[in-house]
Amino acid sequence: MPFAHDKYATEYDDQIRMYHCHIADVLFGLSFEFVKKDESILDVGIGTGVSSKLFHQAGLEITGIDASAEMLKFCEKKKITKRLKQHNLLEFPWPFHDVQFDHVVCCGVFHFIGDLEDVFIEIARILKPGGIFSFTYRGNDREQEFKGKFEQQEEDGFRTYSHRSRYIDHLMQNLNFRKEKEMACFVGQTRFTAIVARKPE
Image (cartoon, rainbow, N blue to C red):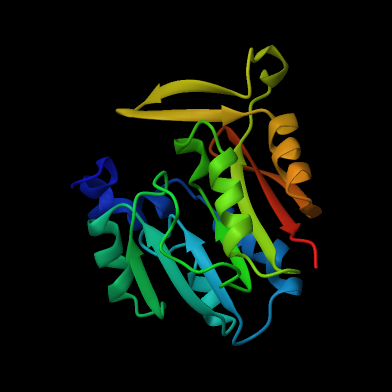
């Protein structure tokens, strides 16, 4: 089944450069001290592999999961991953074993998903104790005006979401994730937050 992101696969990397989007670099920089060569990392919503490139260069073993077959084709050509899985991120369980990965990264994905609770639970399931979960989400200067956990928008034919920071903190606390680092960053005028959290031992 084709996904909306399929039609952007050929131009995705060029768009990243054009918009001077460096959130993948920021997230890697925040994560670097917690990862080691030859450890395994799952890239959730890997797309064309932009967020995995630096982890690959650091010597980690990359597995990627994404709903878009076209995005995965471009990712495969880069030869930075050990394996790729096409799978809808909102269909659970994901095709991985419990406590399978040393670390998990999810960059530039959560603003396409409203309710993140089941995604966080799934990540906690497949992440090894002591592993880090590095991710970004889109915030909003008006988040105190939100009536719920997130706010929905329509952009370029996509339904997107801004999440309340309190909601993200609540999800982490429920799973006993400890926040190690947090940093605000921007793509154009849009504010994102990068977080590195650790699963308890």
